[in-house]
Length: 219
Image (cartoon, rainbow, N blue to C red; front, side, top):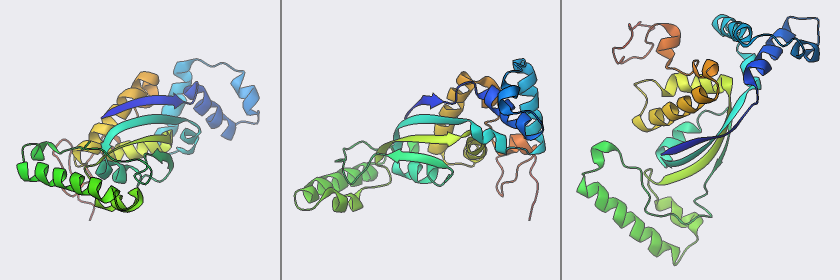
């Protein structure tokens, strides 16, 4: 798996600060931008707004990631976060290879390895007789894929709160760990918001907690 930050909103702290101040000021955003407040002051306001639930201003900042070498199983989970834009490698137009993402517990399973090999041989045979768009129905969830994803900060915080949880599947958790690292490198103050929801809430809301946080029965 490889993840790179392709692009992000320039000066994101100032963008969020300007949007937030616009909501409560008689001045225009142009005038607010001209104030040039210190970065610590802007970060304090953003943290305060996040704490009280005023999250809409975070949507003005977005990140675009290049994601390579994740399974179709992982990408199916990823695209369930619908407030994002995705451009994914097409199995209809791209002939697939033997690039598979194999769970650690199955790496030494010979039957699993043999099944993947047999599937690929049949896939190649089908390509001689049918179009890729039909042959792809045989491809497994383990098939590797590549995509570009753009997500605003509010949705990225939400997705991270779920996918960084120890109850999330190992592969998508690893993906969001890499995403968090990139955001932290780009802007540490914003990367600090990317964490499991138990760290936001102060307790674990899962039915089967991992034990890192106090569990609360919400039934």
